[in-house]
Image 1 (cartoon, rainbow, N blue to C red):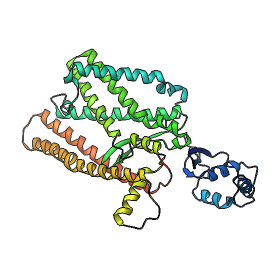
Image 2: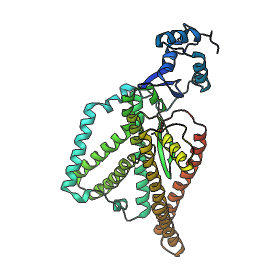
Image 3: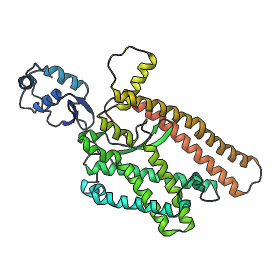
Image 4: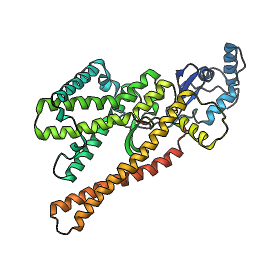
Length: 381
């Protein structure tokens, strides 16, 4: 690309994200540039050369603008390449189909459901779920399978809420499986959220949490209306899962929904990466090349505390709990004639544990490989 060429870059998206911070994207990759870069992109609409655009912008700003160098830098990031048209998941969902989910009437209904659930728990404190709610039947395997099915069904609804929020704003979204530290998670790629204004992004970031709260309110309200023992036991399992999933979103030392909302509020596009790099510099005592802002330094402590706590949870709870269940099942199988029901119970439990851990390790390795190939701004909720 030369100074005399007349590139037409009007197809790129340009969104202001701060006082001197703009995000430009080609529909697949996104980078942030200063205001002068955004203004230059706008001028390159095919009607003038790069040199002419630089001259016009220089006169406007009262300073010299090296337009060719900027365009070459952006070109090296592959932002100026038109990505191939790809069909994405859920593209059949249109804004008119899902926008009503994020309206004030919907918010009011959810608020009423939550209020009704709280009234139910005040009237029936024993309805509030505890960890013992997991064992809602006499069979460990049935309780475990039920717990997993309800958990992943809830996760799917959570992720579909992010999809609905994204589609309500007419941007694509894609659901996949990933890992956060030692946790296996479902996640929604909403990288195109960078095409939205900052205020609009909160709808996409917080949609899943909104749905979790709505389900919590609905389940609690149903308990207060029905009172049947079996239904109440099942709903207690659902409530326990919802409470854990809501709490999970506040572990924002990982890329959770609350993390993205906080980063968006602070205007930080790579808050976790910036904090991680800051901690690496501190631990290696390398000389500072750039000054780290106060918000990133404060968040870095959350990362340290959170990751220590996460691995402590893995070593002090997840692994011992898994080993306890495995030992219990192996003991049943070794004890000789234990009845078909007990043997089947043990085999199903071992299978569920093996599949869960196997899926985690496969996803973790695949995710690490993918991360090494990714250098642009990405969001997975």
